[in-house]
Length: 526
Image (cartoon, rainbow, N blue to C red; front, top):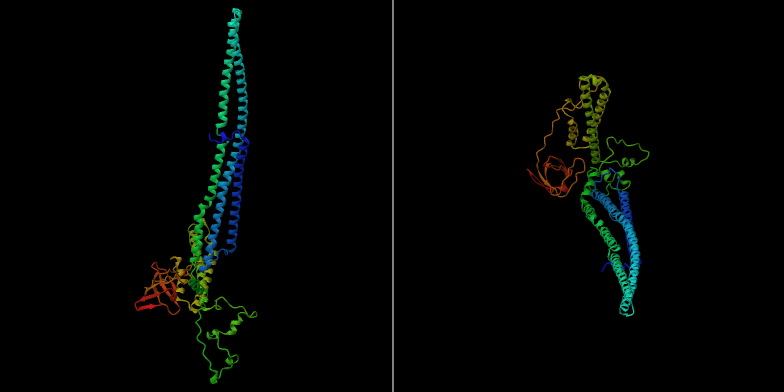
């Protein structure tokens, strides 16, 4: 009895307006979510443009922790923008598209129900008219039957009436009564039919069931609106944690060490400027008394001041930078070592190519149908010339590195790196095999006298005070608290050579990272 159709079925206009307002609400919510997705997409696009604007060029590598932390934040922000795009995409698919499709179904269903309700109301009205007509006829015929019955009774009591009159009156009364009974039955049938239709009309769920399903579907859309963003919150939280972690990974002390390693000149620190006592009448040299200015750091280091300014003189001749003599000692050693490594790699490629050409030549000689060995002669000759040229450059830069005070192990390393070609060429790098033909390549290889260098026995152990990336050439990275074996003590340059358990060796800052080195000669505190 509490159904909506029972209460409001007789107010179709109200039901029509109510269901239409429900559909309008669904359309309004879909439009609201679409605008929200546009906001998310624009927000994500702006975030991506922002990260792209501040991102460095591809291939650039940052060695400072504060610079790398900023790059990490940009990467996390880019991932964060991707999650905002995911929110917009899921809202569009799970809410907008689904509700729009369901809304079309509801509109068709509502139209059908309203049409059926109108037909049912018209049918109920027609049935009621038939009921009313049958009722009135039953009433009329019943009165006629009563009159006929009374007339038959009076005729039967009338002494003057003949037997035929009495019999006729009774037949008339009986006929009227029969007609009245038929009308009564018809009325009862019409009444039952009307009640059935009325019951169907008022108690059958029509628009109410549809409206309740619409409300339930819309409520699910409300929940999805929040759940869509809630599902990506863990990933967004990880992005924010990554930004926080990037900030905590910044190591200001380590950045200073990296900067020093990259740009230290290698010059010794200048000594104290001596006091010149003018009150004692000291005779100064004409060069010193002209300006009365004490010697600066460049003079104390034996540098010519005029030569320094000549670097910036537009009329001066270009400086020969092949040997990097224009650089400070430390920077020069680094550049020379880098040049040696590059030449070594290039030489190794040429040697590999020479080996491949030699094998191909052997195959052609054994199987002439596969190719002509003489066709490889130009390539073999060119490869041999390239190797000789690279060996000459390598020797030149190694001599410059030795002149610049490079460590002996650096030179041995660059030479040893060329011995990994294999055992197929027993000759030394600077010799030419006598077995080759003048028109063919001269196969050369490294000297077998260069044996694998044995690892030096450690002289003690040290403990790392701080993290060290070991990004410079010849250095090794370490973590705070890591215990390393000492291979070579600090010789006054501020570096100690250490080795890990896996055999990796390299230099670490003595004063910055090592707390104590215990050797056979006692404990050395740094």
